[in-house]
Length: 230
Image (cartoon, rainbow, N blue to C red; front, side, top):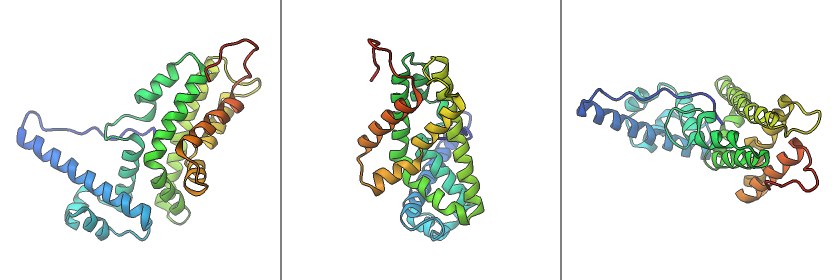
């Protein structure tokens, strides 16, 4: 999950030729990021060259460097696109699913929506996030990308835990800060990759486990006779 908005696209003011040029540029960038994602997740980040990306995307290296000056820039763009699911410059907390989850008065429904949002992201982004995590120990640039991603995910979880606190739903003695740390671990791409891609869990099983884990660890037990959002 990302909290960093991407720059807004600018389209020439009413000039059809400029509009067409911008559309072609977006199409080229999308082709490059798609090709790079395929290579990064199969061959690995370090083993993937700019020349290989250009060849897979069917563009010249000159075009590749014009669109993205570095391999890291391609990776971060591909990661942003995978996390968001589109190229709109909206950070996670401004996405509709997050806004709806935060606004729901039922804390259990909030958690379900929160997990659903994370699960949708990991369907697209988990393999690419694992590329960044794996390469970070030996690549300072990717270490920075990974650490930034962790900070962004923590900021998102803190917003959700603050919402639970406002709804008086946190367990006794549990602070919003600690709740955010717990959610950061439960909803980490590492847990998703471990359970789904290594242990063979289904996507739905991981989602149900994450919901139950967060409800059990973050929220106060329901009072006898109280309605449940489960």
